[in-house]
Image 1 (cartoon, rainbow, N blue to C red):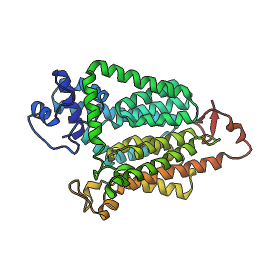
Image 2 (image 1 turned 120 degrees about the vertical axis):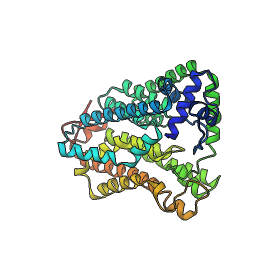
Image 3 (image 1 turned 60 degrees about the vertical axis):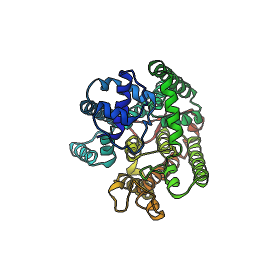
Image 4 (image 1 turned 135 degrees about the horizontal axis):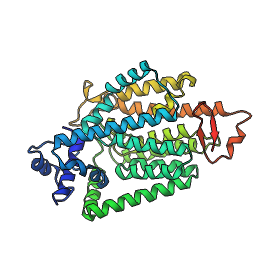
Length: 387
């Protein structure tokens, strides 16, 4: 049973039945599914806009609704891959296509995403559309895609910071405007009570980050330390991540693809709660790095390969991993932190990729790039083209 999807399905059925959207999940599940279950996070922690997306699926029974939702998610994955392949001008052979198919089939984060019935692949599609539009200078479209994604899952809003650092204000303004319009539309449909309940749930979640499966920086530190030390360390770590993103995004020689990928990866580290199935949105950064894999140095290649191996490890299957009870320091630094280490290594690896691209771009033509507001990677070469 997809734990996450059942929350949104129950909330959507509550809306159609005229009940409170965020009423007790146990009550909703018993009414609509005829059974009770214990969830890792008891309340529905998803924004009202997420519930709004599931309403069309709530007209049928739960089994068919979850199947239809997963079909839509896989279609979103397929569309994302088509856009990525087109933008990067990658033409896989039949053997390479089969290898990619097998890799996706056995990739644990994708399996966990399907099992949970999550929104990650929908967000991936929106992020891919935003990336593709922004490389063509269509900042208004890019901002709208980010704003819509932020209304579904809040963390994509952090990508607007990157556009602000590059002074691409059209994307920032349209992103904020789109987020506001979608939120206002949702408010008119579901009512103010739904948002009041959701804010109460956010306050509840603020004190419940110590889940073994939480692979964000906050989750890692919360397992090792108690407040206020864990909060102080999280703020310090977040400041370092933001400073790194700022440094990379304000270099005179711009490399939009790598900067966008780095910022997207950083949002998962900065989120209060990040699950392994959230890694599906990192398929875009992975594709960007993979396109430059042959020209990268050994350090960057090693970090890329090693990080994705660590992020693919299914932690719940590791000996000593437990969702229940208090983990020891050894467990918190070991089996419960494997995916977190992979996420950090991938973030560092992209910094290495960016540094390498800066070195590659330096030379007699580099000054021509200094005053450019942004650039778009050339699809036919590894260089850059001004827009």
